[in-house]
Length: 391
View 1 (cartoon, rainbow, N blue to C red):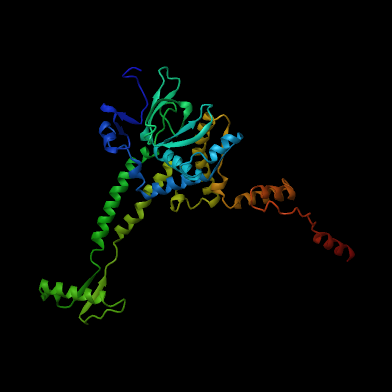
View 2: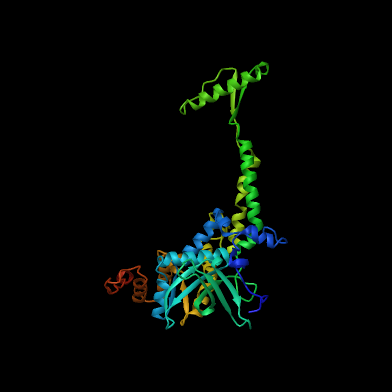
């Protein structure tokens, strides 16, 4: 391969075979002085409660969703892809990395017959992505954690599951959603510092103790009177404070401008929700007051499916069978919406009572061994009609 052949890489190769990860924001910003502070590392991002909440909820809900395929062998691998941990934890780790970095990698350990034995999650810092000489595909160099494996070079794309979100190079690699939040996080950091500073200066003094004729007192006498008053408050155990008739105590309140500053700290929450395409109410915000819970749930389900299609498309491409995702276990875990829809279909005669019961049994809402009781016709209306005719 030519020395200066273009390549797609998640890391820098330097002399001596060492590797400098692109997870280091200082290195990336140094190499890109025009877009200084454009890079947001996952470690820094997860210290933001809104980003952590977004990534946790989305990754947990995607992991709670069910990957479905017609091939029983592939289905077994999707359910239990690794011996390192359980299936839910494995997929949540993969999806969290996808949401943070815009791409995620899973290596397929296969036997000599090409059958999957287990899958291994790879951090982006372990993987370098290269195009083939004719740009007809990709291959990968991977540094495995296990010293028994070490470095594997020129791994074909068929052995690597490479999930991607938005791409700028035809789908070869993905772009992190955090890239769009670099400015917002800087504003958030500055806002936090300003708020803490304003609060410290606004509520540093709990109140004012005014003494008639205090203007004639020396400073050390005022300080002594203040310490004596605070000592009385601290030792009163919540009881009333006794002051002299000539003294007046006025507690201070947080200034209005500081309270407004505190109220504006949720601005970045809406920007983070926008970057991930979810309703801002998911981050415990007020959201759109005109939107119903059903509308908000529908928007969240659409967001899950956007990420879900990136996942199922890659899995279908690498496996020998089509893969789909069912997000109903995540968005309707107790089947409330499902039963409501079935009842609506039954009332409109789209489904019979027997068909509705069968669907509820299939989803586990009703016990599978529940006996099929015959429907008892409602004779109340008929009896009332008979009474009217007799009268």
